[in-house]
Structure formats: structure tokens, C-alpha cells
Image (cartoon, rainbow, N blue to C red; front, side, top):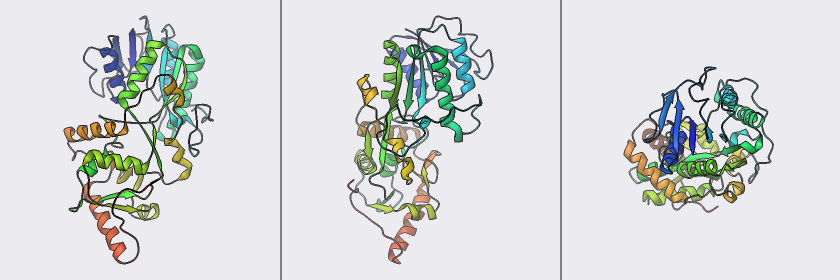
Length: 349
């Protein structure tokens, strides 16, 4: 198979290209060259897709399949225009295209956001709308039988520079407190859904090989937050106490949800968003998606965290100093009767 990866140096695109090479395919990665190098065995074409002629160097080649991870509607529209002769187009979209993130278990037929009208996504505030516009451009430009839309959920595993899946095993392996206490949000029944980047890439490459068409939620298995924490503790060998704090206390002390500075990754307190990590992946599994155990993803991610330095700047989580200060304040609140310091095993969902 002659495969064009529009991307190929960042996390997911690199893994797609790497696995495709490993399966014996001829792979070309088109990138601006700003996110790293292409995998060994793949070829590299450097070009900027923001330019109208950005695909000129590859547009005349007879591609069996194209994989596109863009979030910019203008880029995707130009790609569909210039790569119309490709036999197959796989667009990596996002579960963020859905209009409602409250209910659990929604499938691919759930309502979508209105597509972004602009060709440029200026901020992440319109990420879902931008991906919806990209989907629309692919389907209308190529036809449903020549393309696949992969609506991807939270990606985890080795290489997670965003820090959302690496934080918990890293923190349990490196507690901030001398007695090993780790701060967790009191949200045992929060759904969490992580797909290992290696499993995702494998399914994308195999879908190209099969020329699989349609729309799929490509997400991990749903676990409760308590289960996720228990797995992270186990792979890290953590035997210290847990300190739980409720959403109101955490917000008062400046702790953010989901990701970003001074956050507790994967935590969401608003029930209107908890279905975001609980979408049905039945259609993709029926189409060959194979998912490894969560424990393996967390264990391998911890190894990657250690190999790249646990003190590196993080894009999600608490620093050791931030967590230590919060634990001290929580213990003080418990002693004063203003709150509780809960210790012991993870909660049961």
C-alpha cells in the first residue's frame, strides 16, 4: 500500500506512520517539519498545508490511502480538492464534534455541533466545530464510500506529552508527601475512557488496508475513575494513603479539572460533560478494534514518564510543591473540623 500521512511527526501521526512501515507499506509523511522527525523507513516531504499549493509535491502521486489528522477546515478542504485521485481517505476526527456530552453510552448517531464556518480554527474553544467542518468537507468532497471518519476519544500511552494519562501512575510512583499520601478528587463514579495510541494507530492502518468506510467512535473501554486510580496505584506499587477532596474544596483552592496547570487530570465535576468519556465503541470493536488492558497502558506510560524525566515541565497535573501544599491545607481543614482527610483503599463505584 502506498500511504500518505498528512502529519507523521507528532504523536499519533508518527505512530501511524511507524506501524504502517512495520507492516511493509510505502509511507510518505507530509509535514511542516516542526514537530520532530518521521519514523525510520518513511519518506518526508516538507510543506505547509496552510498554503494553497501546499500539496503540490504529492498531489499527482497514486495514493492507495491518505490519513489526515488536521483540525483546520481550510487545510482539509484543500486536501480533499488536491488528493481527489487517492483511492481512500481516512480522517481522524474527535468525539468533541458531538453536541451533547452528558449522557453515557452515546453512539455515532448522536447529534453533532454545527460545523465551523471559518476555514481557520483560531482557538481551542471551537475545536469541536472545526473538526465537524473537516468531517463535512471529507464526506461531501469524496463520498461516504471512499472515506472513514474516526471520532477519537482521549488518547493515552507512551509519548503522552499532554500528561493526562501519565500523571496518575507518575504521581503514585513519586508521592509528594513523606508518608506516601496522594491527593485525588472525590469522584469514584466518574467515567474515564482512554485509548492507547498504539491500539488506535493499529486500527487506523488496518482500516486503510481494508478500505473500511463509515463513521466510528474509536475510544477505549469505559472504566470508573476509582478503577482507573486503582490500576494506576497497582502499576506504580503505591501503598500509601489516599486523601480525597470534593469538587467545591478543590475549586476554592484553585485546582483545575481535566488538564492544564495545577490540575487533577481526567477529573470532571460537571455531569453535563461526563458522557464525553463514556461513548459507545461497539461499532469500532465490531470492525476490528482491539484494545489492550488499561494496566498495560498505564505501566508503559509510567516507564516513558521515567525515561523522559519526571521533573520535566508538565501540561497537566500538580507539581510536587502544589500537591504538598494542598495536602497540608486539607489536613489542617480536617483537624479544624472544616473538612476530612480520607485515607485507605480507593473507593468502590
